[in-house]
Image (cartoon, rainbow, N blue to C red; front, side, top):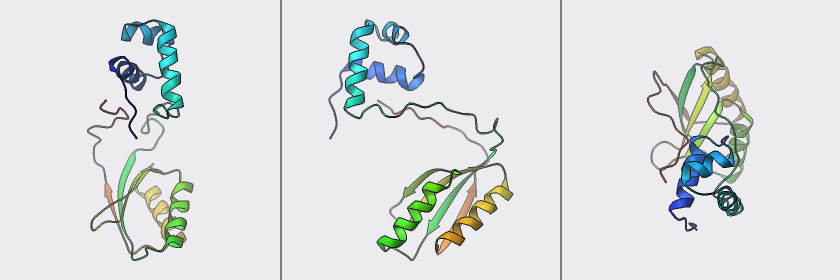
Length: 153
């Protein structure tokens, strides 16, 4: 269920999406309000589940994780036991940045971040040894054109 947000709430959320490390004073100044109302709105949005975990964004390439693969998975297994095991395996793999279950010919797509093709192969070998998969196609991203965590609010 969507929560009603007014213009000030949206300004606050935009400021937080841009830089959650800002002080309350900076956010209040940016959105044209004072500190206490901004804090109260942030608290209410946290309680409502609109604002979740706060974290930092790291530069993957600066950390040596230069290869980004999109992994397309087709499976002939659709039983609950297989799905539970598959999800458990994905959650345990730090290389998996995102995982989506899809409609259509492809069952799942993964975003996998690793150092290089050899590291991807190690990930792939571990994955297929842990869970039965019908078909895997890996697509290497040659260039990241756009990547954002900001929602269009």
